[in-house]
Image 1 (cartoon, rainbow over the protein chains, first blue to last red):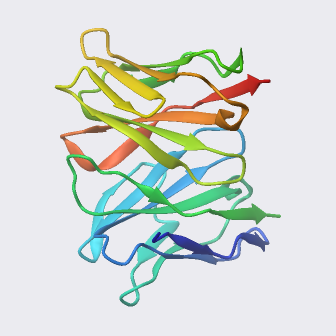
Image 2: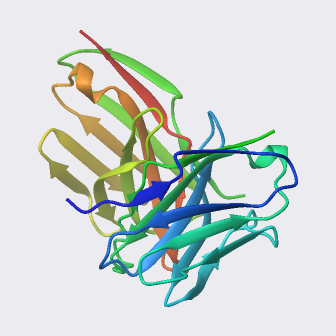
Length: 115
Length: 113
């Protein structure tokens, strides 16, 4: 069964450094997403991406964050100048573009630890 | 303010009983509501979707209801098993923000043998 893959599974970085989290969505999907889950808290929407541009973003997704689809398969989240409070699980998801259902298929996540 | 609340942070029930989880929302106009399962350290996995004009959906041992008057969805697992132990998340999507879904905080369900 097709799945969303994320790398790395765990990323450790120093405060102030930049990180890039990588995702390979399901191949025929059209919408791509990033979510964040701080330990013990709820899954929070960050951004949706369609047709090579941001479709929607939350108030969390400020200038510190950016997304890119550099080629036909990868979808990346870049976090500039990381802060301690950026430590969280980051999930990538994709959907087939049927917005009346918008069923999300999630990857296993990248645990980001900012020291 | 907008809220999605799942009634209890944790629910413990005995194997074989029916688990009922509640999701209430405030100041949203959902086009649909979804339920996901999340195991520790893993991403959510989609289970069921119910649209605003539907009252009930079923899939195997799972049933979800949707009451737009009460602004509530109920999620039932019948004949519960220890393997059903996980966190269950409700999520909704609105027509006004078609590509975005908003999650509740989840209910951690434990089924004891």
